[in-house]
Length: 165
Image (cartoon, rainbow, N blue to C red; front, top):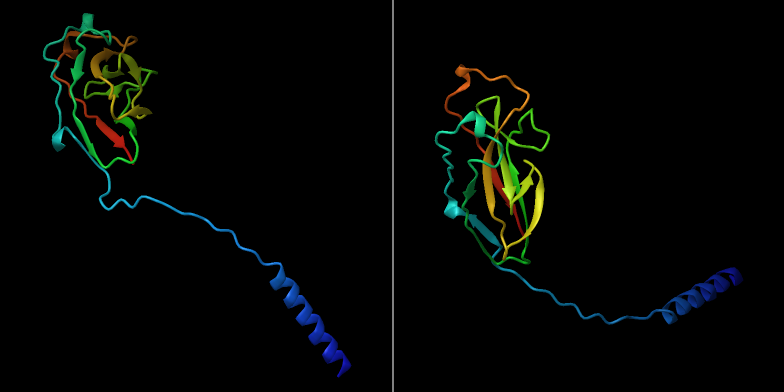
């Protein structure tokens, strides 16, 4: 019985000590509830085509025949203006700087963002309020041999991926 009373006293003491040591901290919390998620639309949802028309093999150098790829990006409810752009596609096997593969094994398409060569499948950070200028130009495999039968039409397909918050 003495042991029982002693245990009760110890437990009561521990409970009193624990409750005496409790304290609280006030915290102000705030946030911004976004009901409508952000949305970006590229070129009104339409594909864009670039036509190089007739090009001379001897003049292909990644600069000649360069064309500006006009694109319109419209975003609403962005949490911040920082977005990421990625030009996605298959890469040529002959260019270490990451050119887009075409249907012609000896040709590729080089991309330039603000006149700086951009590798395919490489993400870059940009500001939505200052979008880059995108240019494209054909390039050729400099180590390949060409013959009269190498001429003809070519095609390529790339996707401009936009990541945003």
